[in-house]
View 1 (cartoon, rainbow over the protein chains, first blue to last red):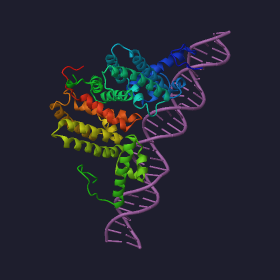
View 2: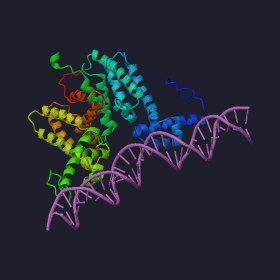
View 3: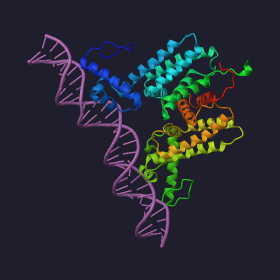
View 4: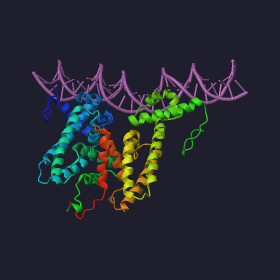
Length: 201
Length: 201
DNA sequence: CAATATACGGAACGATCGTTCCGCTTGTCA
DNA sequence: TGACAAGCGGAACGATCGTTCCGTATATTG
């Protein structure tokens, strides 16, 4: 009766204005949650969408459902991007490039951060599952880099993911903002690199 | 008229039960805020202290005041500990030991984390000031280590502090918990170390 | 254009939480 | 021990926020 299919966008039945509002709400939510994080009031989303709260609730039965819809899409991007790098010729570049992309994306969208940061605790299971998939894909990139002796062998994907979200969070908290995110991520990257010491050769 | 002196504990005038309640409230708040973070309901603190909310509010005019009292004490410890390490014979050990201590302390007390994480934004100015002092002391430790060529020169105290608190926070969010906090902090440490290599990679 | 299902808007509700108020209890002191 | 100030408890208030409800508006269809 409703959206139903998880796979992708589907020509939706219903009144034309309903479809338009559905889209508007998603766009508004995307913007508001990015800027303000998961705890932004739902009324703010409705206002921004030029829609009453009632309408919003007809399209998304719960705040969490709306939030989930936005975040799932974002995380999906993160996931696809990771998978597309698996098996690259240069495993080291594949990993570090991805980490940079991950950081940039997360820094721009506070909602993703919120979702990932608290993935273990309460966010609805569908998000947690997707996050787990991202961790798995990241794990593959990591393993490749480790086998190429570019990254320390004793780092796990979970740890790396936690580190990355920490880095971005740290960057966002300070007033410097996006500029320093890059630097902080660089520190983390340096931390997991394997450093070929002089005495080793 | 009230507590007044910032320096230390003072024999307080007033009824005996009032003094007892004051102490009880502080103890309860310490425990509750550590466990639940800054957003724990005030009623929970009152209940734990075996006291009515009214009583709590007579001793601390505002939730923020209570929170501040607890957190300031904790941050003060962090600050003293940092200062005591300034000028140590081994600057490298001084810094890294302190970071480990900082992480352990912050992991055990969610309240400190909450306060530091959002120090730039809204927490009352007295906390922000103290945090700034800690950053400054940490900056001295950092500078020493950098002059000893043990740590990269392009890392700032603010960055390091943000990264540390975020790392601990990220580590706590995951289900692994405190065990992995140590490892995550270790990776960060590795990231700021200077690795003596003729030509990296 | 009329009829009708569909969708809309926003007032109102209930839960949570910080804070205030005031009638009652209790420590203190003579 | 009695009187009184100091202190206490917790009901109640107001603000915020998620969610519900229902009278109204409008897209659609024939």
